[in-house]
Structures are given as structure tokens and as C-alpha cells.
Amino acid sequence: MAGEAGTRMREAGLRVTRPRVAVIGALEAMRGHHTADEVHAHLARNDVALPRTSVYNSLTALADAGLVMRADVGRGAIVYEVAETWHHHFVCGRCGGVSDVACLAGARPCLTPGEDVGAVDEAQVVFRGTCRRCLDADGGGDTAHEH
Image (cartoon, rainbow, N blue to C red; front, top):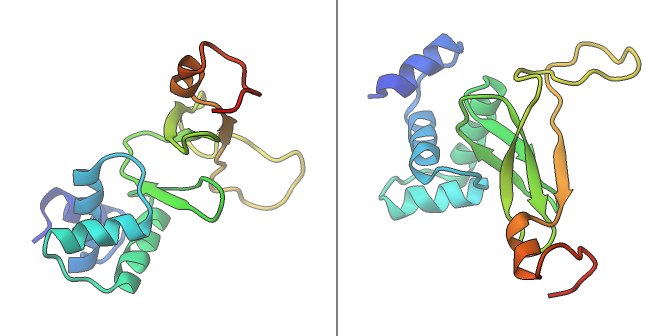
């Protein structure tokens, strides 16, 4: 039923279920950063009938197990992706694009808090600004310029 995805789930200590296999398969097919609603819509377009709650629950389980990355990119949007390496994200305030930014440490947690807060599992950085494409469209770099 699951192939490689099922093997990765078992190795991460997850039960292999039809919804989890479908969700990780959708993320692999879609590539990039996607919301739970986008994953749900992709599955529906491909005749995979799953309740929206199953998609959300599967994404949560897969992210908690480290099989997909979850990033809060602002304005209430959480995006998910299948990623081979730990990395951060850049969100363009103009076009809304999300792109990957290499983590210099290469593994999580790559940052440590300035005080003892407990056991840190991960630290994510979300850079915000204007992407290269938007800057180039404006002629090179005036970030205060409006479209």
C-alpha cells in the first residue's frame, strides 16, 4: 500500500494509514509549500476522498514525526512540504511567495534560546521582505516602492 512512504513512517514510529500515505504522496506530487486546504483540494481533484480533518490530522502526525516540514508563514497560513534537509523560509511581502533558505547549521535545532526554557526540539526562522523577482520587476531594489 505504501512503498517508500510506508517504510519512512514505520521508521519514524508512525502507523501506516491510507490518509497518511495519500497526504505524503500529494505533497511529493505537488512539490513546494502548500496549505492543508491545498493538499485537500489536490487529493479531491485526483479522486482521493478524504475528510478535511483527516488531511489536517495526517499533516500534523507527519510533521510531528519529522517526515514533512511545517512552517508558519504569517497571516494564519501554515504550509507543509516534503524536505530532505532542515531549512528556513523567506516570505515575500509583495507577492506572497515562499522560498527555502538553507540552514547554516544543517540540523535542528539550529538556534538556542538565550535562557533555559526547557528542551528545544526545533527552531524555525522565517525571513520576511521583498523577493528578488519583485525587486527586479521594480528595477532593482527600492523596497519602499509600491507596485
